[in-house]
Image (cartoon, rainbow, N blue to C red; front, top):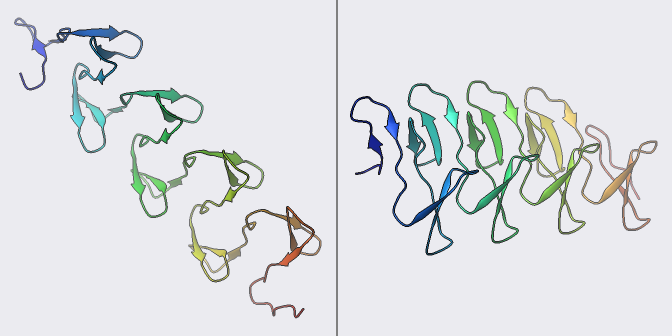
Length: 202
């Protein structure tokens, strides 16, 4: 009764019964309440649910299987989900990962390797490793992997050394020869202070 599942009397095989007042969406293996648009999810056979992560584990192994959340469609390319009734994006925890909530990064459960996920409502500029807000020209910067941010200088340090790496400031283009940056929307020049060098006096 707890799981609303039935067992075959002559074996351990689980068989699923159609819940009352439901129709089955065969493609998504979900059920819709006949009298509303509310979606109800049925436990797949041979699975247990991890309530915290909203994931399912195969009863006979540690393999994780992901179930489509209710009222969502999957964007297969980005491995993101969209709320069916709005443009709001919701992110699903990738399998075998833990989330570092502070940095919005994910760690591979079986190693220290960091993997970065596309932030919600963003597109990636692959060349500059920057992200643009889908709904505006505002640029948002993502913490590079294995780095810490020096908040004062708006620079990043390699976590495993003192090597400094410089990130393109938001809304700027770099003049490589002069090591200066130009404001994308004007001719105003802005100078970035390299590490261990004196400031240029204006």
